[in-house]
Image (tube, rainbow, N blue to C red; front, side):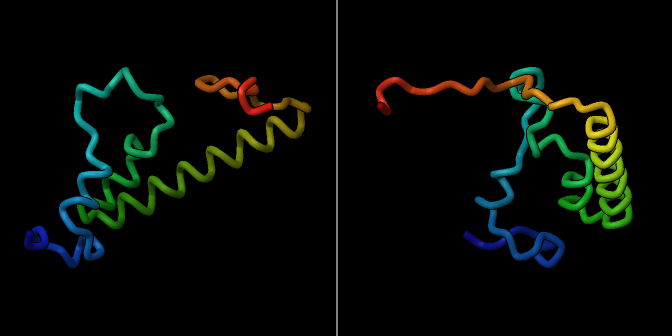
Length: 92
């Protein structure tokens, strides 16, 4: 299969690689909001908008730093919302 149009903008990804990040509307509300396919910086990067991608990445990283500093200052241990740690009894 030939490479997609504007392959230079897509880091040489094949159609298969590009489809791995595809986010169909039917998954909205089904998968976690933290799924990387929802990241606006990633979407902008895939669309070739480097300025928006860089700005979104900076915004996201600053937000994460702010939360981390808040948690550390208040001795809060963040808990996952979508996953629970458990031990599989058959592993014993």
